Image (cartoon, rainbow, N blue to C red; front, side, top):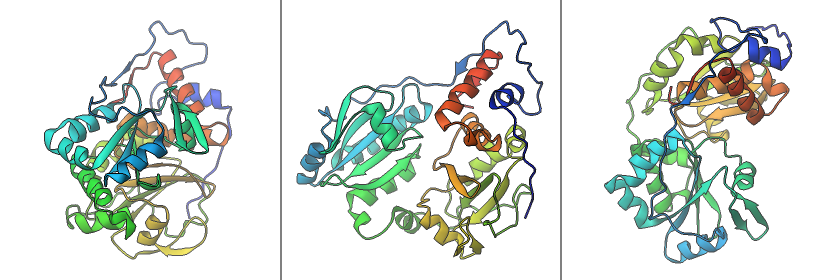
Amino acid sequence: MKMKVWHHWNCWILLLCLLVPGSRVWAATEAVETRGKVTGGEAYAIPDWFKQSFLDIAEDAEEAGAEGRHVMLFFHLDECPYCSRMLRESFEAEAMQALVRKSFDVIDINIKGDRQVAFDTETSLSEKELSDRLRVRSTPAILFLDGDNNLVARLDGYRSAKRFRHVLDYVSSGAYKDGSLADFMAKNQQAGLYQLQPDPLFSSTRDLSGEKGPLLVIFEDDRCEDCAEFHEKLLAREDIRTELAPYTVVRLDTGSDEALVDVDGKQTTARAWADALKMEYRPGVVIFDQGREISRAESLLFPFHFREMVRYVGGGFNRTMDRNAFSDQYREALLSSGVDIDLGD
């Protein structure tokens, strides 16, 4: 097992002095003439055919169920490039729109919004509060509800139209009553699409119980439609590999019964552990620290967001602040130092 030596610096010093690994170091007192800019966001409009709901979700679910339909809650964020892309590909494209409208009542929830939502008979919160309660960390997040207002499937983050179509079939057919989304996807996606590639970044360890420092686990299989892009556009980047230096990085083939010991010391397999963690997306990424899950990515991220997620744990910030506070401070440190942030890169 690879041993790591941890140094504990003040978080502000880390934020200001380790903004861009491998690049120049900013002193806290350095004057910056031009503030950085945020680019890469995309404005979008919610389709006018989404349900004009009074946001009594239990009532919406009951109405949909009576008609043999399901409710789809679409959690989004203003200027979110992933939301814009998914709306364009899977809700506005004619063929996909027809599939959605046939079987679903779609209700939008703005994760920064102030509208009151009666989620059930005991829960009435603002959109923002509900998003926090449901741990919405990636947008778009899509929750599917049956007629009894039970959650039957959830997606966190962007999905391609092809993948999303499988999820629509899973929910609308009622297949969730007989098995998991991961099993359904495995049966309905073509095998042999992808060949797992070696990478010197990957550790060969299969006993993860002793990994107390940052641990990043990647779940892949040969049905993975997005794995090649993940490797080419994220893992191959020098800046991201620098961010991953504090980590033990383990890649697991969930198409196999490869044996391992998980972070809790349990004897299991790659496939069984992915199922236990409810990881239905490939490539799925889960980050642990001190044997505890800190964050995960269940959709393909743009480089900036992946770097930020990796930095949060790799820099030890998760031990002193929550993810939202880190994100706000990290981005402000970049911008105040004159660094542009491209959300689409």
